[in-house]
Length: 391
Image (cartoon, rainbow, N blue to C red; front, side, top):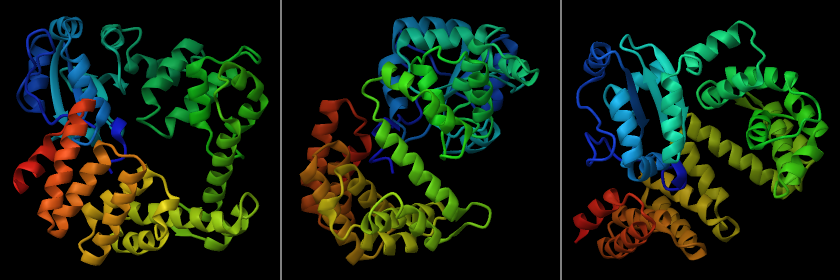
């Protein structure tokens, strides 16, 4: 699904950067750990995947700066490791890396000391590196304090930021303690809002009750916040939770429809049910079921937005071989481009044309995708390979 989540794209493994930026060491993980231990430094790892977007932006705009390079080259042994290739697969499992980009700092014994997630501006990335070297701010220290029952709000906020995308079971526990000790009526900053809204799962949990209590404070802090949309999404998520048993992996369609009809029309509820069934099929890697569901779901492609159509079209490109189905995906991709032309959907269109054997059209759209991608600073390497192959 790399075509849709443009904020989630990365470079392939780079060994080093130009002078002024971070110098990334070669070698396997064991060798890098030994080097870190010998030099009494932490090993910094940029954990990425080839479809991750902020990673690419970090590689292009942050890792290459003098400010970041000077600090990281002096303080750490540095490495870039693709989490979906080679030893990166086991590293991702060992350190529970599930979001990208993730940055980890480990000592020479391989113990996780600190972590970070997402895009940082250069100064902020230096700051997170300083935290990794600060014994009072390292994640391993925050964990010990949290486990000991520490209620300091600054500590809890820092620990939550580190764990939010790494441990889906621990993060709510940190948030629960934070809000239990945050004075009522004290207002919400951006990080407070993110912690609360990301923690809400259903209308029955403690975080939704807190949200309702402090709704006026949240709206006052962020006038652009769409409360109605948020509440509808949480109510729909509650319907999904009631209808789908995670342990047995069984979806009760009657319960879903009965509950959803309390929130929306029958037509809307059926669309939501279909969308859920497609997500479950993808999660189960049942691509045949997904193909059948998607062909029915997107019959009237004009009713869906460009991103959703592009996502479905790209999934068909990757997972479907039936030519008739691929022709349908081609229609979705065309409609996506018609609605909002961009690098990702033109690239999808080019790849689909190539897959069905229309090399001439693939060439036209690959060139357009390359031009659009370069204009936006995107990584066009894969598209350029496609273009070169059809010239």
